[in-house]
Image 1 (cartoon, rainbow, N blue to C red):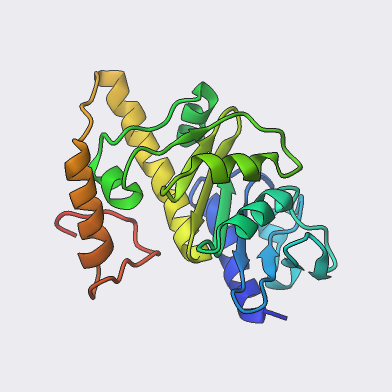
Image 2 (tube, rainbow, N blue to C red):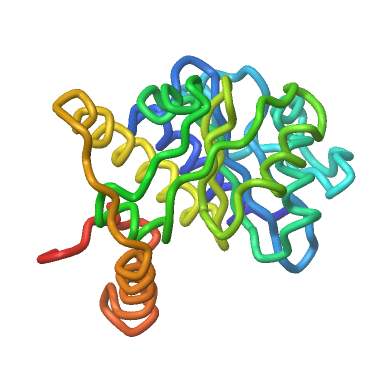
Length: 229
């Protein structure tokens, strides 16, 4: 069942430690099949290097296991809440990437200090309130506070990203950590200036419509860097 999606979700999950976004067994990627509504998600507590595509767990939107011999991620309820309330989302990622999570620990959003933030996120990366792990509380907070951003920092917890596909959500997770590191370094040296909202809007619209090999081709596997690239 959903063999192609399981392969994709597996491949993207193993990208997380390679990109330095997770350690040990933390973090997860899920993907929703638009036709069936079923969700494929990482199994709970399994080392990334030990996982295989066949270990991915298929669940319905109510959390019932449809296929899989392992227990799904403990964050499954969070993912499913977002999927039920955001029909435009077909991929979700959760990480504890260190630089972005440092902002989450402080309960601080990441302002638009960089063109990369304007391009990829279209505004500040928001921060949501503290919410308990294990139920729907985090999912509810994500839906209420993420706005139009593909990413949100959850206070005292970590990073969640969403996208129209699992690949797009992983790209957003990579970019959150990238810009968080740069902003952290900039703040050590001084106080950067925010890019004006009208320029953020212009840059984001250009990125979403003109960047890539064809109009509207925003390659979700690209690093997200613009300018001369």
